[in-house]
Image (cartoon, rainbow, N blue to C red; front, side, top):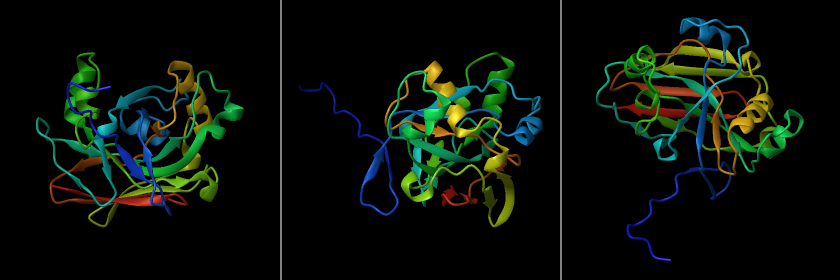
Length: 228
C-alpha cells in the first residue's frame, strides 16, 4: 500500500523501567470528577452521571517538555490528574472486570484555554477549542500496573514555581477508575492504547509563560512542564 501523503507518526509516551513506548490511540477526559472542583467551577457536587470529552493523541507533551502558551487565549489553566492507560478494550465492560484492561498509570495535566471554554459553554458549543488544542495533554511516563497495583488512594498535587496550587486524593474521585472504564465503554468501544484522564482536584488556575508546573500522584509518578 502506498499513501498519497506521508502518514503521521504514532504519538507515544515512555514506559517506566523499559526502552519501550506506549502507542496512543485516543485520549478521553472525565469532567468534574472531584466534588471540590465541581463546586469551584460552579456546579453541584452530587454524583451525577459522568461526562467525557476527547483530546487528540498528538497533543501529548512528555515529562520535561515545553508547553508553548497558545494563541487566541489569555486565560490558560492547569488541571493535574491521574491517567489510566489501557492495554485492551471492548464494549460494555463490567465494572468487576474493568481493571483487567488497564496496562498502567501516569500523571497528566489537562491544559485548558479557560476563556475559550467558558465562551463555548455560554453559546452551547463544543469544548474542542478550549481543550483539544496543540500541546494540551502533558503526560508522564507510564508505570505498569504490575508494579503499582491499581491505586485508589494517594495524594494528587501540583506546584507552580514551587508553590502548592492543587491538592486532592484519589479516594475523593466521585467516579472510581473501574466505574469510569465501564461507563465509558457503554458510550465508545475502548481500544488498546486509549488514555483516560480521570479528573482533577480543586485549585485549578491560570498559568503564564515562564511558569514551571510540577505535579504528581503518589505511587504513580511526577511530571514537570515549562510554560513558554
